[in-house]
Length: 411
Image (tube, rainbow, N blue to C red):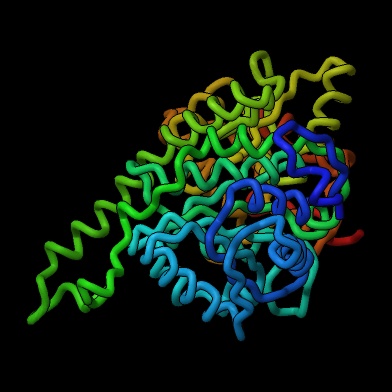
């Protein structure tokens, strides 16, 4: 771990770290008031870094080391309702244990930030990277952003606080980075100066939304709707308000990324990234750390004269339907590579979203569903070259394969 004392002065620094440490530095720079932790692979070292930063005085925050993930998020809900800026991290079965307070958090409109260091879910037993955990909870009302690089993990963690606390949003944010590949993968990263982050996030003032006040006792989250309660109209207003916050988040995410780019010179795609897409005949659709190898495959085929591009999904929730529809309208076929499974569809979650965007674009081109990288398996540039070949074949025939293509099945 980089020396904290040497990195705190108000000047940008270059560090070499893994994705978990990058997330921890993003937390430090964002100055949360309360951090609650419980370890689980491959997230454990992230909260160990944060705990060490609190222990050595680098971060001035209250640390709650609780008995499980359900208690972690429940305690942070109380802290957020009292006006604190909060942080936690989890993944896999820990996220499953957290589920009850997890689904309550967005309904309470709490501007919390949590890292999901994604891994595959049970069963069979697995502690390795995948995105099944985060994709399983994608429709619970949290904003979900996925990172490609160690640098993007650090930067997005900071941006997440500004997005969550924006008065037009007021929703919790998950910053997702792939277990194993980004959690333990080491790379160079630029760490911004504390003063720059303080200016970017503004005066820490979440007290305006705090509900808990010892001088004004109240019940939080009372029974709502149905006979004898306040009636279904109040319940509908809650749901509609949450949906409005999600819709506003698309704009706020773009604005936040744009300002971060002006501040640091690092411009991450806020919703989707279009890579070599303008004259492409077919495209890959990717999400997370797989994107680097996919770009290498695109570059190699481009050098051979193949007109291929790539669309990277950064924001999964709210899904940027309009931006994706515009990007897809440029190509004649796509291959969508998922690191998770939507069991009801026998396809991938990003593939489902891509079909929705194609419908919005009225652009009914063949779309190939590809599932790979489960349980930490590699998705290589060779795999992506195969996916691109399938996209070209689908464009030529006008028809995609019936059902998903499973990578790594015989690796």
